[in-house]
Length: 121
Image 1 (cartoon, one colour):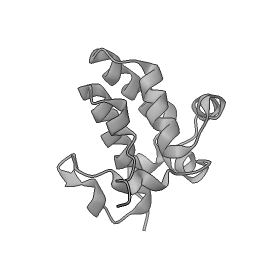
Image 2 (cartoon, rainbow, N blue to C red):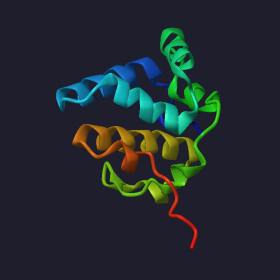
Image 3 (cartoon, helix red, strand yellow):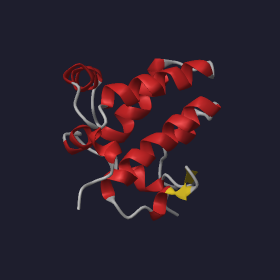
């Protein structure tokens, strides 16, 4: 069975939409890059290379240096679906990123967006 068509969408296209979204809400591209880096492990040069090379979302996430282990702490609704209940691993990663971008655009504190596990008791 073929994957969802979003999987073949270029990361550069999605990235430019994310930039417009956060800037429209008076936030910065630097904040966007920070959450992408936190989630995927890409550094600035790796992120720019993925954009320049026109990689699709499937490749972008497949080649991510290190998905953040705290990504599983991302919960809530995106497009009416709970991100923690998405079965397809790639779609879940895409929706994790969508959720983080929404939180940046809404002005949530970066310390809250970059989830840290609760301290052990």
